[in-house]
Length: 120
Image 1 (cartoon, rainbow, N blue to C red):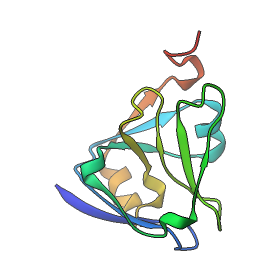
Image 2: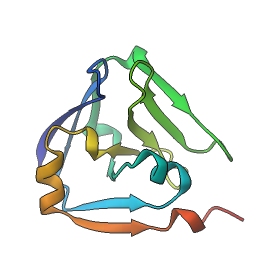
Image 3: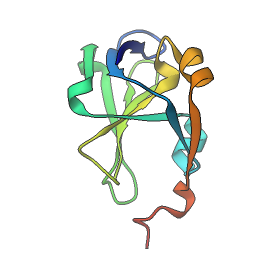
Image 4: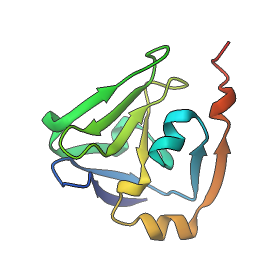
């Protein structure tokens, strides 16, 4: 597994993730579409905020089961805790320094967030 470095736009929030990312997830729900994020799931033991935890803000809506963490200074969504598995992180790989490399080597999997399995 490889360790990747990432940050928000202004650099106040930095983090690292460890993993092998041969598949990325593109969700078509309203918030993911509007933010333009591409997810990779990462367990807590493979994700570490290295700087700026105090600059993170959390946005929740609807059921409030999911958390969307973003930099309170530049507004960039860095990671989240999905309602399907709130004990896991989903990293916005667009924030990783190696984003282009990961995208060129990964398969894109679609997640139907418009018809989320937990929606009634």
